[in-house]
Length: 297
Image (tube, rainbow, N blue to C red; front, side, top):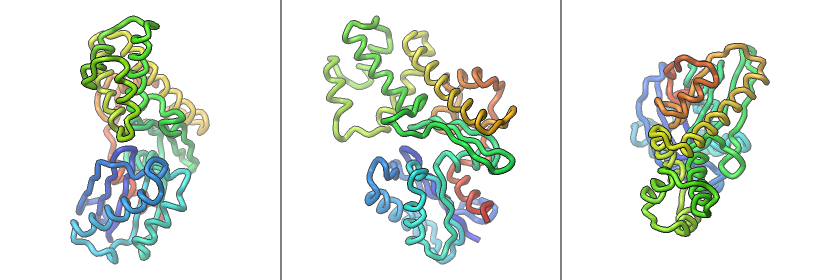
C-alpha cells in the first residue's frame, strides 16, 4: 500500500511517498509556500498539483498505486473543501484526508492523535487532542492578525524596535546596530523600502529571528525582551488549549523551526510550561500527514 503525505507549512511545501510502515520511498521539498491565503487559490492549486505530479515522477510511482493521501496545509483550516477537491482531482482513486498544518505536526510528533503541540515557525499555533478525540487549537491567525512568538513576529518586532530607536523613543542597543548590518542598509529610512518591497517574502522576515536570539544570548536587553514576550505568547496559546480540553499534565511536543532545536525561545517556553525536557518527535509533520491518512480509516 502506498500513501502520500503533504506538509504545506508557511514557507515550505513537502510531499512524501511512503510504504505502509512509513518507510519513505521519496521526499520532495519546495522552498515556497502553498498557502492559498498568501499566494491565492489558483496559484496554490497549480503549485500543489505540479509538485505532486513531479514527486510521483521522481519516485517512479504511478498515481494508480496511491491508496491514501493525508495533507496538512497552512490556510487549509478555513478551506478544507478546496484542498480536498484539489487532491481529489489529482488522485481520484485515493482516499483523501485533510487537516490544518498544526494537526499533522501533532500527529507526527506524538505518533497518534493525542497530546498537545506548540508550533513556532514562520507562523505560530498550539493544538491539542484528548483521549475522546476532542480537539482544540489556539493561534494560527496568520501574520496580519497575530502569530505571536513566530519567526515572522520576532523579525517584525526587531524591525519595529529599530524604528523606535531611530525616533529617539528608546535607547540604542546592539540589536539596533545588528539590524542595519544584517539588512545591509545604512540609514533608518531604508527600513521602509526594505520591508515594503513588493518582492519581500514572509520567510525573509522570519529569517531575522536567529539574529534576535543571538543578541539576546549576548545580553542585549531589548532582544531579551522580544524573545521573552514571544515565549509568553506561545505559553498563552498552550494554556488556552489545555484549559479548553481540561487537560492535566498532557504530553507536550514542540514543532516548527524555532522550537525544534535548543533555542532561547524554546528554553524560556519550557520554563513557563514547567518542562524539564522535551521529547524528540516520533515523526516529522509530512510523515504525520501520511500517518493521519492511515489512522483515519
